[in-house]
Amino acid sequence: MPVAIMDAAGSDHLNQSEYLHDLAKLARRPAGVDECDPYREHFGQADGYTERTYLIPWSIYRVARDWFLGYTTTELSPGIDPAILAAARAFWGGIPADASLLPPQNVATLKREIPAQDPTHPWLFAADWQVLEGHGVVVEDSVNLALDADGGAILDDDGDPLVVPTIAYADNSLAGNVMLGGTPDNLPQRMLDTDLGGDFRTGRFKDGKVRVRVTYRPRKYAILNDQEAAARPAGELSRYVTREEKFSLEVVSLARLAANGTTQPQLRFWEGPAGLLGKTVPEAGVKQLPGAVLRYTWHDVPDRPLSAYSLVLGRVNSNPFDGMGGAPVYPAGTLLCQPWETTRKVSSTGRVSWDIVFNFMFKPQGWNKFLTAYGKFFGATFTSAASGDVNGEPVYPSADFGLLFRIPVPVRYR
Image (tube, rainbow, N blue to C red; front, side, top):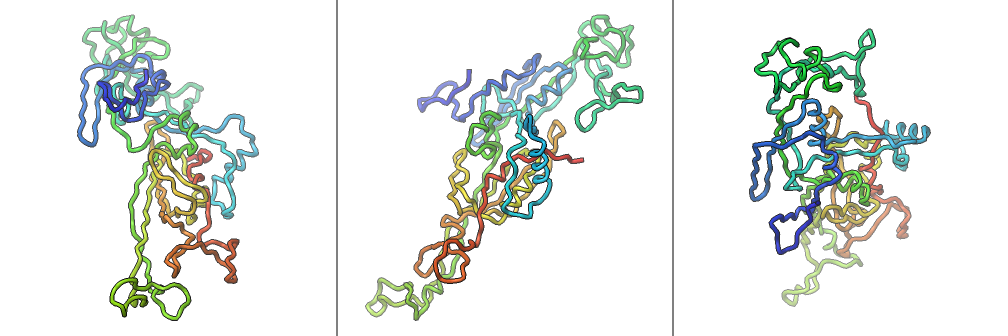
């Protein structure tokens, strides 16, 4: 049963993490994975981790590794119209010259196999996988095939799959003390059928096992499966995104507020000696305006939304932004998109992925409102006359920041 958040009265199984055990993930756990000794855990005031040890059939240890650690990839939408796909490839394959362009409809989806959760602490996720030792006799793995860039087998001149020599483990529970380099004559028939190479897939020898240590740790971002993310209004912004806030103050000179000979309100003394009351402040100093620098890091992204980013850079948000996972909602016009940072990585499956840092600057009054001698902020646009024309060009044009979290067409990196 899922572990639910308990009430304030507490419980022997208290879970205040807001994470339930993902039952669909548990149902996909590879068969034959058994936990064994030792088990370790460490918890402090600010963090914690657990270490669990498993015996895993050698023939599925890579499948089990992908299940424990999880992975991310991109899939094209099924049945997509070729013309739409071509338009999407053209858009995502370059930098749009026209900032009014929008990407075609979604033709790809982000597929995440989330990492496994600790069985008793669902807020801890598998983060490290370490093979400790193999169990069984060492044989040559006859199904470790040479693979092409699409995961298909590379064939030799005779049309047979090429095998890359490597070890495998076979069950030697009935073989006694079998030395490496042994021959089929000193291995029992029940373990090995005809040759030392064997074949896990056809069962020509009994499967060995591997002992693995899996470390579970908390993540700095929310982990949601594909169904949960699709149900959220913000989509990908709701998962695998860390948020950093650094609050700041902007200094604006108030010298113009102390100017003489103007009909606009001026900064004047309202207290003090009689001769000072109502006088203009001669040195008005500065006004400090609150703001913030924001860093949003989108983790493990298969492909960068480069074209969409080029449409947002230097612009302000046209719609309210964020509000996911306890983050505030930033009103339209208050965020300015700054240059991004990207880091290329390679996952345990070999898939290229990226950590993308989106940088924003926040002004609570908005980027297209300016301080006046009235001591307040008013909107302004570029116009040819003092007509208050709201149809002029703003200093900072706007864009939909949701474009930053759109999924581009998969990229070939070779």
